[in-house]
Amino acid sequence: MSMTRRDALKGMTLSAGSLVLAPILARLQAQAAGAAIAAKRFVFVVESNGVPPAHIVPAGIKREPRQQQAGGPSSLLDVPLADKDLPMSLEPVAPWKDRLTIVQGLSGRVCGGGHSNNFQALGAFGAGRGNGGEGLGIEGETIDGALAKTVPGIFPHVGLGISKRLDNSIVYNVSAWDRNKGLPTIVKPDLAYSTLFGSVANGAAKQEFAAKNNLLDFLKDDVKRAESRLAGAEREQLGAYLETFETLRNRQSRLNEIEHTLREKGPVASDKYTSAVETDRLDAMFDIGAAALVCGLTNVLTISSAAGVRDFDITFKGLGLNIDKHSIGHGGSYQGKTWADLYNIIRRYHFDRIAELCRKLEKVKEGDGTMLDNTVIVYLSDGAESHHSRCWEWPMVVLGNLGGKLKTGRYVDYPGYGQKGHRTTANMYVTLLQLAGSTRESFGMADPGLKDLDQHGPLAELLA
Picture 1 (cartoon, rainbow, N blue to C red):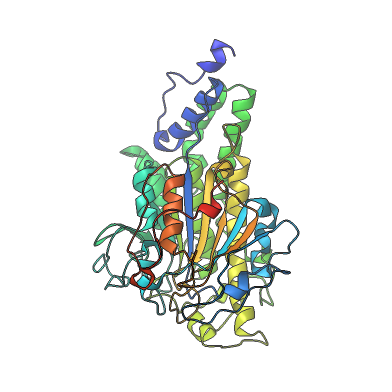
Picture 2: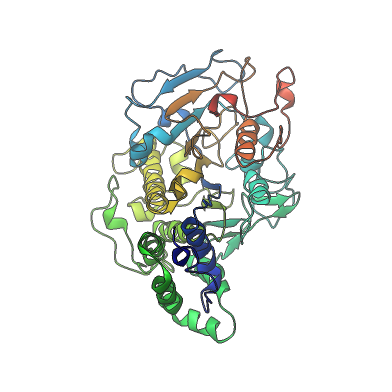
């Protein structure tokens, strides 16, 4: 490897976009020098209103029915996904089926249940008053907060999402740094954009950033300077990074691209960063979150889809639905679609967005693989297993294997509550912490109803 290539970026000065481009250029410089930099990343997508376990069982897998009580199956069900068709709502991530793990049977009884478990969903601790207020009643850290301390970035944690209330800018709903220390979820895309990327600018440059509608317009001088120094392979890779930022230029609705909706007419084009349509705003948040990951601003991202007790009854009008999620949870139908059909339509939209995030991460080379190889995405609901949850079960969908550290391409269903081998959401979160490099053996609170079971340690069945 020539000295010219290895030292191409040394001493290069950055102006306006130093915070955004510096991590990218550092990775490219390391790659040119023959060193691999591969950060571990964790993404949580938290949807409100529960995930009925039956809705995410692939075709051909027979799941023993479980009552919402102690007992149930006494053995672990572990089935490869290779020859199974995913449920309609999970179909968008079928291209990554070999990296997919559907995890069923975990309980979270200490969390309390109800319309939303709020901070308890990611915290695995007892129910308090932490129901969307500014931090009061939170019993401890949540898993995204714990991971932010373990794999810190420029922003240790980024929380993005949507609220049913358009006047909300920031909410406190599912993420916490510590006891009574909630982490913010930004629910206005234009505020999230300026907060994350406006931080690169100071003085006159800040005014310039505010005047630009596209991040690449703001960074153009730094980008040109970098391109002039890069050799072929690194220059091509910079293009992959910049393509993610280019997505932020498209501020128009993408709902015309979404199948399996009830829309009869395409949406009116509007700026999704300020749109009143919830799907537009969530789409924008996924774009912003992807850019934050790609440019190295954070290693821990949480995207909240109206999670928390204050927003769980949101209406997804952008999908052609004029029925709110509370009514759907109570068995409501719409235009000939059952409540289960409507659940699947809304979940399908979320997995469309997750699939787009996967595509963006997969395009960016990192080490001997891509950014997707070093990322774990966890989808769950703050409402556990149902609209009125009791947390006997807490379905999760995990995408990613962290370079082979997770056994994936599987459907894993744990024994019922109280049965030998039963595990909890806390064990899942210990698994993630150990993947991140922690030696912790416990997380959150132990379930007093499982005092006869060892509640420590990771989910060993998921580890390679």
